[in-house]
Amino acid sequence: MEIIFLGTGTSQGIPIIGSDHPVCLSNDPRDKRLRVSVLISWGPYRYVIDCGPDFRQQMLSNNVSKIDGIVFTHEHADHIMGLDDIRPFFFRQGDIPVYAHKRVLQSLRIKFDYIFSSENKYPGAPSVIEHEIKNEPFLLGNLNITPINTLHNRLQVFGFRFKDFAYLTDVKTVEPEEREKLKEVKVLVINALRIEPHHSHFNLEEALAFIAEIKPEKAYLTHISHMLGFHAEVEGKLPKNVFLAYDNLKINI
Image (cartoon, rainbow, N blue to C red):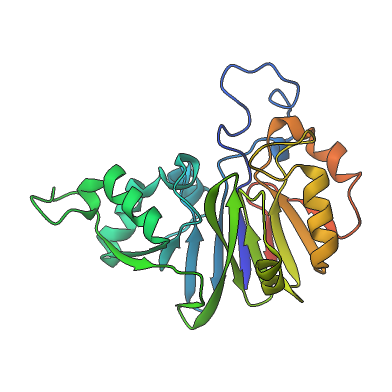
């Protein structure tokens, strides 16, 4: 299984428009972060988790010519607003499967009514096949995926476990029964927004405590803001099995 970190930034990305913060002015390419997303591939299958406003750029940067579907964690703009850019995939492949909580599908129907509506459909609009995710395993390709139910402040958000790999973003609360689903995971991706506490995301301290409890072989931090600090400086202070993810990083499990 190969995972490509398409984007590792928070909702505004890094650099932030008009910001003179030192991290936003960094020349280290690892400090330049698009909105958060990953591409997961195994065998003939390729699935994207979330497609934010940078989706087109991310697909071009990684030379992606085919996807088997998009899995959504939740409906915030930085996770969904690239959906229109599935058009090239649709023109080649036909209807694109999308997987999401019922609430998220309802939100997508409102924001992208011209994609989901069957009435007077514009000829250039893509079409999708809706799959509702509940808090129970579901099939992607030939693989059973386990949803991890979490809270982003008070908003329900799904993380996902793909065999030995788990991906959780925009997480603040994970109940004990959901943490049980992460037992013996080998690679964990978890959000770590910044140093200071935040009302709807893990900060660095909370993310490291969560990793210490789950005990994966390796962990990668994502959904990072400029307020976490410079990539090189922060990574140098992390435990030996914890890494800062960065855009276009590829890992294999």
